[in-house]
Image (tube, rainbow, N blue to C red; front, side, top):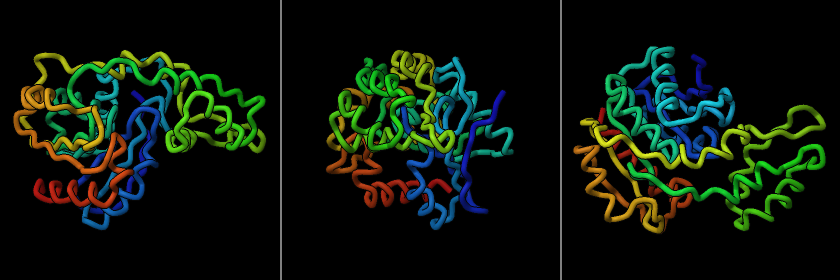
Length: 259
C-alpha cells in the first residue's frame, strides 16, 4: 500500500487526525491545527487519496480510504487516535471507526450524516475537468473560466487552492479530476446496515446546512449509540470556515473531555 501524505504539527500530546472534504486538501485546516497544537494535541493534517499531495489511484471508495487511514496509523505507529473529518472526510472517519475500532479513541464528524446523498457536484466537476492549462496560464484566468460553472466566488476560491505550478510556465491541479469527476456515487455512499461503532463521537452540524436533518438523528444513533450532536449557529456546510472561533471552541471542549 501507499502512504498518505500528511503534515504533522506538534511534538507531543494526543494524536488528532484531520481529514478534509471532497475537492479539498489538508492545508484547508492549518489554522485550526495550529490552535489545537497550542491546546496540547499533536495534529496530523492528512491528504486523502486523489487529493492534495497524496497518491492518485483509480480505486476510490470509503472502504479503500478507511484502509488508507489504517495503513497510515500502522506506519506511524499510532494507537487510539482522535479523528475529525469534514463532509467526505467525515464519511471516511465513520467507515474507519466501524471497520478499524482498534485504532480509534474518539472521533468528530463535521456536517455529514451516515446516509446516502444524491450527486450534487456535477457543475463543479465539469468546470474543473475542462480547465485547459495549455491556454490557462494564471490563477486569474482559471477563476474567470471556472466562473462559467461555479457562480459563488468563495467556492471558486476554495477550489482554486488546488492549483499549483508544475513548472515555471505550467499550472496543474492537485486533484485527480479524471477519477473524481466520476466519483459522485462513491462520495454519496452509505454505511452498511450492520456497521456499528461504540466509541464516543461528536456530530457537528451547521445551522444553515441541510446535510444533517432532524430525520437523520435516529440513523446516527443507530450506527453510533454514543454520539452527541451539537449545532454551530449561523453556519452552513463549511462551518469550520464560516464560524471558526465558535467551531474551534465547541470542538476543543469536547476533545479535552476525551483525553
